[in-house]
Each structure stands twice: as C-alpha cells, then as structure tokens.
Image (cartoon, rainbow over all chains, first blue to last red; front, side, top):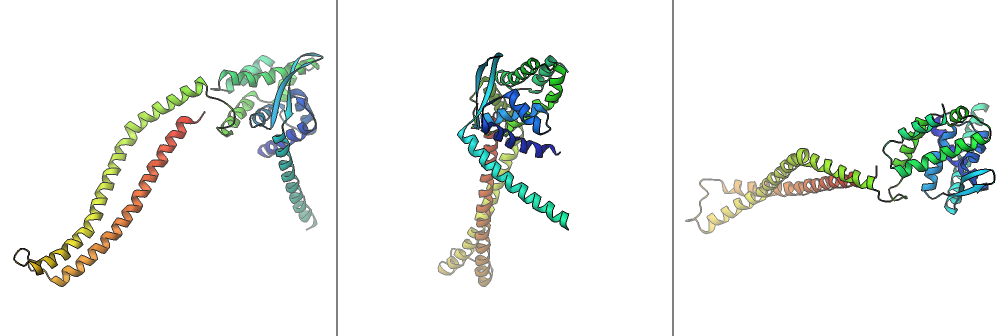
Amino acid sequence: MNIQFKKGVLELCVLVVLCRKDYYGYELVQAISKSIDIAEGTVYPLLRRLTKEGYFKSYIQESAEGPARKYYQITEKGREYQAVLLEEWNRFITGVNALIGKEAAA
Amino acid sequence: MRKDQFLAQLRRSLGGMDETEKKEILYDYEEHFRIGAAEGKDEEQIAGSLGNPRVIGNSYRIEGMLEEPSAGGGVTAGSVLRAVFASLSLTFFNLVVVIGPFFGLVGVMIGLWAAAVSLPLAGIAGIVALVASAVVPHLFSLSGMNPGFLVFAGIGVSALGVLAVIGMLLLTKMFIHGVAEYVKMNVRIVTRRR
C-alpha cells in the first residue's frame, strides 16, 4: 500500500490504541503490527513526534520481569486530537466506500 | 543484521542532531531489542521487523524539520553555533554578492525619482515662464516660443510627471517590501534550529 497513506493512518492507529491504556514501546508496536503490516521501526519516530507535540507523555517504570520500560500515556490534548482524526477518518472511508459502491453497481 | 549494526547505522543516519536527542532516540530501540530478546526472538529477527535503520533515521530528521519551532527544545550549544555559523556565512554572502546590486538598485531608484519629480517641475516652470514674460517682459523672454504650445506642453508634462511620481511611489513601496522580505529571510535562516 502507498507509504504516505499508511503513515497517516498509522498516526490514527497509535492514537486509538493509546486511548485504551498506557503501552510501552515494544508492546504498542506489537499491538499495531498484529493488525496492520508495517515496518515496526516507523512507530518510534511517530511516537517521538506526537510526544513532542504534547499528545503523549512518557514515563519510565520498573517491570516485574526485569529492566525498566518506557511507557507512553495519552494526554487530554491527545484524546481531543484522536477524536478529530477518527471523525475525519470515518467521513473519509464513508466517502470512499460510497464511491466504490457506485463503481461496482455501474 | 545484528543489534549493534542496526544501532550504529541508525546513529549514523541521525546525522547532526545533538547527542542528548540521539541518545533518547536510540534508547527506544535498545529497549525494543532487549524486550524482544527476553521474549525469545533473536537479534536478526527483531532488526528485520524494525526495517531499514537508515530509513528510520531519515524519518526522525524529516519529522524534526516539520516541527514548529515553538514546540519543545531549548537553545543548545549546537543550535547557537549553527546560528552563528549561518549568520557569518550569510553576512559574507550579503557583503560580497548582495550589497553591490543593492546599492546599484538604490541608485537607479534615486535616478528615477529625480526624473519623475523633474517632469512636473518642468511643466510648472514653463507656465511660470509664460506668466513671467507677460508680467516682466524686460526680464523674461519666450525666445520665440509659441505661448499656446507652452501652456499645453506645461499641462501635459505636469500630468505626465504626476503619473510618474505615482508610479515611483508604487515602485518604491515594492522595493522596500522586497528588502524587508530579504531581511526577514535572513533572520529566519539564522534563527531556525536546523
């Protein structure tokens, strides 16, 4: 699939997933790559940018199994942004599906 | 590719970022490798699913450029040095390349202004001469010029002059605007972070 398109969608995916709970990087990457086919390394640059823009916060937490892990937590600003993107996404796919439906019918 | 190779390539492709930033970025991948290994994956496998480290490194550079200057990130020694270097090379460029044509253009502007202002003055002078030759004929003579021609030429030249002055006002405004834009561009080049 088109890379630029995927990148835009990936941003939405990261926001949606982090709305559920806090994830550490590895766990988040697995959660996303389970559903969509991506180069896992593309998630970290995105996480870093969205954190810098104030959509996420990160904190380090010790884990039971071993060394500390860096967790990402969505902020209020991030939740708002997620809602906006999700709305845009839904409108977009409704439009695309309507077009596809018409083409198929014609 | 092994973990060390992956991290080394990633570090290289981050280029001129400052060390703290590089460390922060690399930390995420170190942790990723560590947890992956704890789950029983080997380094080759983990590096393979991460993707090409050079491409990943470039995407940090691109995202850095997209960021608004206000978002995070204070003044660092590197950014100051970059700004100083940028302003030095800009100053050099401005002194050597820009300043000559700039003064040339200023000269042209002054010349055009003189021409534009002299037109209505000439027109007025013609009419003044006509009046003077009628009032004090022993001091002024029209030296054979047709007084009718003098009146119409005077009005015509004055009108032309007014148009020229209006034109010059517009041109001067554009010139000043252009200079201001250029100065602003210089400031942007010097103050931007990378």
